[in-house]
Length: 237
Length: 83
Image 1 (tube, each protein chain N blue to C red):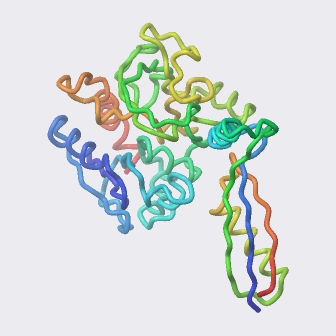
Image 2: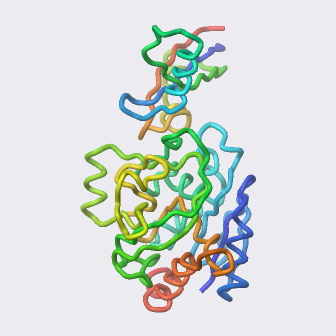
Image 3: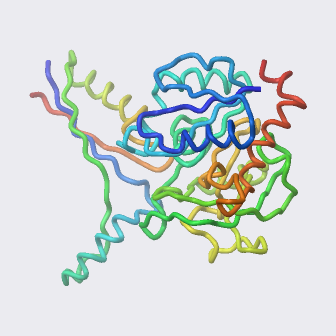
């Protein structure tokens, strides 16, 4: 399978994602410039973190109109796998590919540190190598990661199992004390209705080598690989 | 005709506004104790050509719905002047 990492003007985690996929996990991966309209045969698209278009207007609001995003929209309609990390998550929300919005952090500060996450649903292409309720460590680095969804929609999201990761304590306690940014329900990552599109604020590409303090992030990328080997060639072709 | 749309985008009631709260606290620090609440928002001035004021309003509304405001968290209002 082939991964494509989209490069917007202002992306700054694009090379980290590319490096982890190519050099750490030995996957086929290409960069996709935002002006391109062809996904070049990629089976999984990654929208990396950064400050696309300088965060003008709202985070992700301008990037969603890039030519490449039209191709990504079509790819999603065909059941393609898309992972949005941090700013990539913001772009997916602005583009209506995931429900909700991200507000400025509760305390009005940029936060850059490791957090514990509880894996809520392991029956998805992004989480199948985790066990339900497992606690993993992946860093966050954002000013605007305060996930918001009106209450009725939130309960639907919860009921359908679309919440994949929650901020938690070291033993998996989901509690306000372990909520870094004020997100409703301590939500750190959500999936689309068909579980083929996922957005998360934590950066798995920054936690993919033990040398960097954690390799838990690797398993998100490797889950996608395994899912693709098992069912993807049928679903995404 | 040439028109000018003045658009104000604000957060919907109940959506957390940390900037507004921080500014309110700063005003309190300046001893404006009477300040109860500060709400932040965005202002856009859009100059455009349109046949009529109604057409200009329709176009501005579309722009707000598609780009200038995020309907999940924001609301908008605008007025239009002939220039």
